Image 1: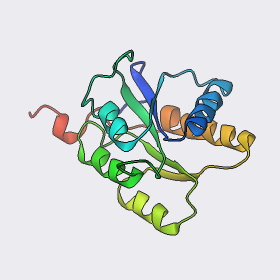
Image 2: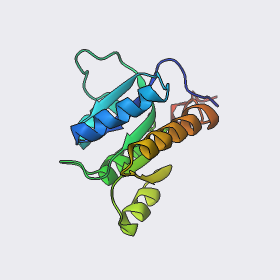
Image 3: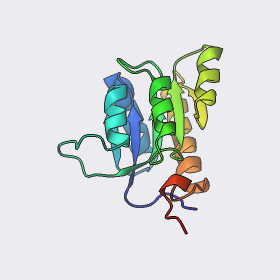
Image 4: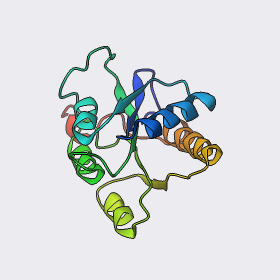
Amino acid sequence: MTATTSHESILIVEDNPDDAELAVIALRQKGINMPYQIARDGEEALDIALKRKPLPDQKPTEPGLILLDLKLPGKNGIEVLKELRASPHTRYVPVVVLTTSMLEEDMIQSYENGANSFVRKPVDFATFQHYIELICHYWLHTNLRPALSISQRPSL
């Protein structure tokens, strides 16, 4: 089992640049100095998380936490979640759906496809900061997860 390591980052999957920037500001203001990457759509999120394409000007890191919006151009958040859970490399990475959706169906689909948590984005920035702090503290410091999925472990 492992907690967050120094080569991990937070992957923020958010197509709205203002919302992505608010997440980064919240991280910094709450003293969460972990590296982060921003994906603007579902394909870019999968490229980063699954290391499908090298990204210029970014150090290769493993996502230790993924903050996933549902309403994305191209592949939506549920489709991204399905692919993340299908891969042995990202199967156990905590994924927190962070969305404005009020639909019960979005929540159900998120959990059915492997989301670890479903959080509605609050309108108030102070509350948003608090949520980001709680999410990061729990998923990056308190929660333990396997270092490798079973399919990645060497056979005995």
